[in-house]
Amino acid sequence: MTSVTAPDTVVAPSRPELDDGDHDRFAHYCRKADIVRAHVTGEAIEALCGKKWVPTRDPSRYPVCPTCKEMKDAGFTL
Figure (cartoon, rainbow, N blue to C red):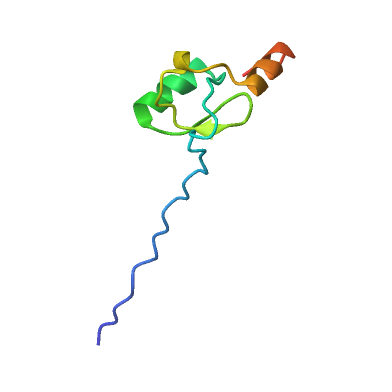
């Protein structure tokens, strides 16, 4: 008799928790390399203020995030 073994269970990687962006429309400070990578790969990036999202909109159409601006003015770097 031959025994049949079930394959190992495949678990999908968890998706990052993202903000939908509709509740706060601001332009955020991020690393330029991260922005380019996000546009190419579609992965989420993190702004200086901690917001995580996939950039898809033109940031010049929105005001600068007050938290990002405050942190950058205080000397925080990306």
